[in-house]
Image (cartoon, rainbow, N blue to C red; front, side, top):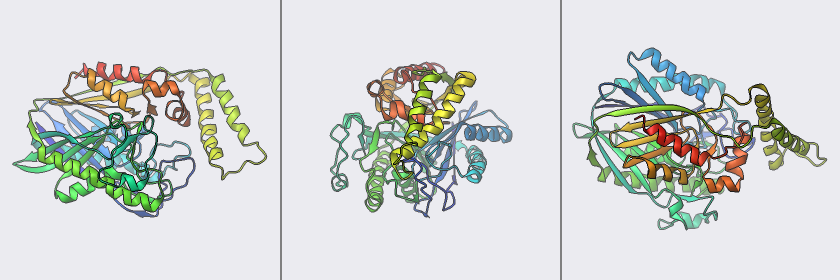
Length: 441
């Protein structure tokens, strides 16, 4: 069994607009607080090669993913599957052109597939026999569930080391750590945890990878010569304990929360026990999930309601609600046009499953909710199984059944913000699709 690792800097130029938080914020970056990276892990069991990328980015488009895969295929003589995963930072550049959520910097995006392919190829070139250790350790004081534990605590409370959410059972309370060693020396580590990474607020214009990116940079500095990959888990309904606070306090909290994650991963590296890996396996499926409605007339009516807001006498482009309406207007027009053109036929989502010995990693293009992850873990035949969000593409939130029934931002609004109808039963269908995909491993 061989493993190889590589890291490339993908920090954008200062001045690029940052992605996330809200409609038409025009968050032009003013400085680099922490650099962004593309990190790759290549695996080979003598028969098959798989590369898993972790990017300090909000999202990635299917177009960028496919371009990177094509470039790897052209330059690598063997067969190789590539998984492109994002940490979901809201303080990096926009890659996916979601109207209102950050302007795409075309030169940066044109360069990105080449940089990703080069990182993959370098990781493949670096492959060598390595031993692997694993630990699952407590990771607390980082997140709270915004759907089931809605009261955002004061910042003076969350920066205390003893702060805990009122309902920890609705959050991730452990993190997983993999340690890779050659001749007794650590060459790389991988950590997995699920929490919306955002700490900083929408006024913040510094480039950084949010708490998980900051933490991974610190861990690499503490362990010279290593490469660290962070894999983002179920984050759809779990915020960090500090979010949407003033800029100064947010930047201070960023370091505090990053330090908590560093502490957890450090403990994982200390506790890691050797695991036997006899094979790797990869499986992929394209799944068309059921939508709530595909009636163009329904969305045309919604479009008319949003357009009417701009005709009001006191309408102002400084009004946040009106700016949000602008997001809907643009994307509802695209949605109606697409429905009338082909009935939304090209609507598949790519799912991946990667087996690394006793560990199964399920990758999805959604912002997955905790309850979905929990159901996948319960039904998986693997003792250790991870569910990743925002991988290879972006297909909106995957809310749990309770949230979907309630409706609102994650269930109904976000899909329409990206020009898609809401899902009918993404909780049940996604769990079934991932367990079915597991059978192919």
